[in-house]
Image (cartoon, rainbow, N blue to C red; front, top):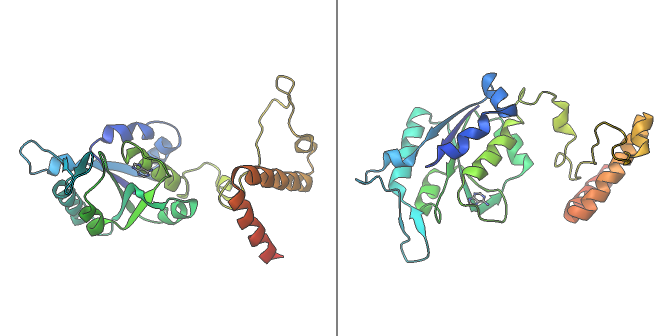
Length: 234
Ligand code: ADE
């Protein structure tokens, strides 16, 4: 999978791939990253990429020209590139999107800065538009990394143990049960005794109960989804 980051600040992005799982994925040629800087495409003599908003309003908006030219050059090189814009004005990104996007061959993330991107660019080039949550970041770079990370770990071979994909939160509507590592007693605090007894069917049913408790507390709407789904399965 090729990821292209269309950003004025690739420095913000690059560091994330210099360690741990995504570095290993690059070393194993499972993913690769590159960048495209809209500023390099600006025809303005000062390489300006933003301007005040037409119609007024606070802040600067990214001009269409540098982005049009940058994205045209990207599409000339790969007409099948899947172009994703990161903005708070969009559909919330989910685990299902991560799994679906993991099947693509080339994804480009377009990150806005300032007050946003001229809407004409989004209309002309976006295959999809995602928000990573109901808050405003200073730019789309962090949001692109979030999506890229979530997509990458769904690419075959990126995670060491592919089992870890199927049981985790959001593969079902329930949040994951709490996990514990060694020692079994730490500062006089133990782990649930059922976890220690080795009866896997009992451990499974305790984990389900704990999952339901966590979900009820943190994400009650997800518990409802789970109950509806399991009532159909009965
Ligand atoms: N850019 C700024 N805030 C964002 C958000 N919440 N999601 C995606 N892109 C963004």
